[in-house]
Amino acid sequence: MVRWSCRMILTVVISAALLTFFLSFFLKTFWNASPMTSLQPTSKDLYKLISPSSYRYVLNQPDKCRERSPFLVLMVPVAPGDRASRDVIRKTWGQKDQITNIEILRLFFAGLPTGKDSHHVQMDLESEALQHADIVQLDFLDSYHNLTIKTLMMMNWLASNCRRASYAMKVDADTFLNVHCLVGKLLIHNQSPVKQNYITGSVINDGHPRRNRGSRWYISEDVYPATWFPPYVSGAGYVFSVDLAEKILWASKFAPPVPLEDVYVGLCLRILGIKPTYAFSFTSFHNLFEIRYIEYERCAYFRRVLVIGFHPAELLQVWPDFQKAKFTC
Ligand SMILES: *[C@@H]1O[C@H](CO)[C@@H](O)[C@H](O)[C@H]1NC(C)=O
Image (tube, rainbow, N blue to C red; front, side, top):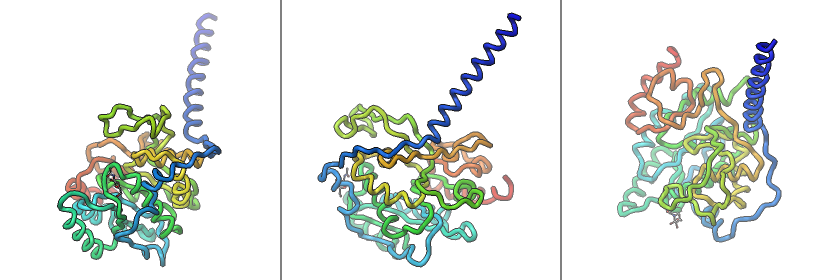
């Protein structure tokens, strides 16, 4: 009798714990926040600094979507002088015609080069753009601090030049991207129609501002007073339905202009009442977007959309081996 009740208590406790765990996971994952109703516009001067309409195109590719609507637009922010990364991406995951009947458009986004060699860098970039027709450049200074401008510039480019595309992905140059996994597993699921208000990647739920001035990610209380960031997707790579481009641009009028581009997109999503979707593989129990470096292994990489931390030479080196994954994994 005594033993029986002990077991019962244990069962109840374990069930309660499990229920709480799943309920909180469910709420965190699927609960959609409602749009914010009391919005304070960012001051005009501050907004002018980050708004794409304050800047002019130096290089543009306005006709890319005129005659067709890509299924996926890969948008890669890159420093103007980083030709090595661009060339390797063109030969690896940014290649044309990787998937039959799926149109993928690859574009690089840059600001103006800085430093004493900037004149040469700019001349080289312009001839590279003529050769490949895949570079878009706006006339703000390209720097880590200005990445938020670059992201808004990508949203603006999509909203004004490529609205009929289905999905877009912002993806950093130093990553490994598995386009087959992205398109086949994540986006074309059971022939589902194109999603709306959809953004996915590696979701960060417990981000908070760094308050020590020495930090690369320092944010003052004046710019962002709250203790936590709303959920956001890591900037290494995130995928979204193209309808969001215009909505994020609209929300950017109200979001505090933090210089962390992924947090910034999260702030815009919070304003819109849109929660990022987790990209978790329940069959192999890991994130499809791996925002830590993992040693290259053909089949492990085959089951992921993205892995961070790749140098161009390394990417070029593993790519031929990765091509065998389709037949062996
Ligand atoms: C960002 O770009 C603007 C416009 O070109 C420039 O004035 C500013 O100095 C840049 N900021 C940084 C930190 O590079």
